[in-house]
Amino acid sequence: MLLGDLNSSPDEGDSDKHAITRLLAHSAINSELLPVSDGGLQHSPNNPYAKSHTAIWRMRADYVLPSKCGIRPYQAGLFWPSAGQVDCELFADEQAVSDHRLVWIDLELTRS
Image 1 (cartoon, rainbow, N blue to C red):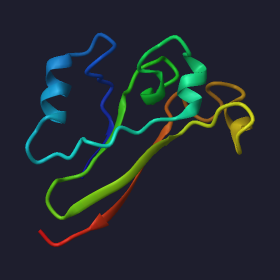
Image 2: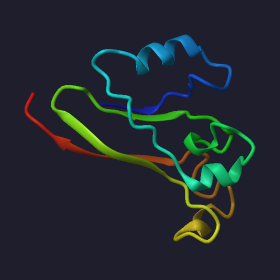
Image 3: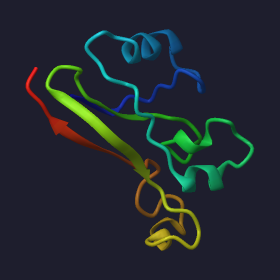
């Protein structure tokens, strides 16, 4: 399992896109599930990548990447509720909680 604030996106920002693209394509990493949120889309409605933004500065920066060995991910998302959803008041002030949003993944441990 590889997880954390990598501050890199294959699509946006000024980081080395080649590095994150290679990581996401690595043969040992399962990067098939793209976590998304309604809050990201509401925050940047005209951005084609908005649903997968993990930071308020409009980029996917945070990752939870399981191994392909012994782990089967089946659902992933971001905790970034849009207006009217449960707990949306936590984000009324954009940086009240953090400028990053929680990435989560549901997985099953398997035998490899």
